Image (cartoon, rainbow, N blue to C red; front, side, top):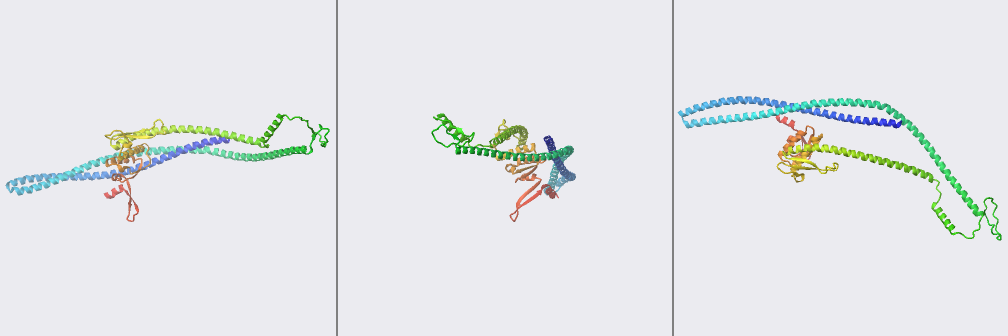
Length: 493
């Protein structure tokens, strides 16, 4: 009954562990969803604020454009007026001093033309700026719509996670109710088992005591028997319980009349050789046998039981080894399958990322030993724009660095982590590659927070928060932090 209850309790514990793992996964997913919702709301707020700023700037530019259009109209009317004055001046020149008047009018005309050209250039600049702001406004609007859709989806995921959590909590409550009577029965069984074990230990102690007494009695009996045999020998040696009746002419002392103990020696005329050899063999056997061990049977039983126990343990170990080998084989298959799945996904993402970072070309990942996925390595073959396919070892430092960035970004796309630290990855990149590198970082930063260590000005400008280490006048390092959004707002204010 105890074994049955323990088996049922083990099943309940396994189910409880599974439910708790599912609960932890659900809580983790729920927390992740909540964090993503909060991040999406914060991003939405930032986008809306930027959108409002862009709209205000757009309205301001429209007002300035209208003002410039009005000023352009006034300039056009003024230019027509200048043209009329020029015609009048030309007619006056025909009548007056031609050189002086013509020089004065040409100067006024040149000034007016410069003013008109300046106004035209300003109008063109404002129109370009207006188009740029319109495009930015459209982009921010699209991103705001996408964030709103993402927020709705995340809220749905949160609601589904809460529903799943409630279901898991209900299952946990049911399992807890089932466990209570089983735990009570188990406690009772354990109490009765402890009582039985106490009785068994007492009986075993009494049995061991009896065994020790029996061993002492056997030893004492053997000792008494040896004493009796020794006494018999001493009596035979001391009293000479042998009758020499074969020599009547020889006077001798008559032995004591012990009935049953007096033996008649036979007359031996010649000692057979085989008898002497047999006596020597028997004496050698007696010497080799040594003293009699009365505990030999008990020791044999104990050693036999120990041997059977160890044999059983060895069989159990062999069975456990077989089971472990099966588990290892299953894990190898599982790891190979997951490795192949991840490798294929990373290879596809790596080709796209490589082409994007290099502005062309192609690259692919290659297994060194496809037949043994547990021991295989991975090589990279790249074909840069306008060049042939070659290995990673023959590339320059900047090309190897950018290829490594492509592989890291591919891994981040397949399985985005919460944090990623990059230490002077852009040190060997030129400005064009740094710009593409920053664009990839901005896209990946939606799911992963990046911590960059860099000396590149373009990378610093793309960051949201900057931490700098400088040395003060007292030769002590100081940490300087700066949020670029707040700095831009302060500069604008």
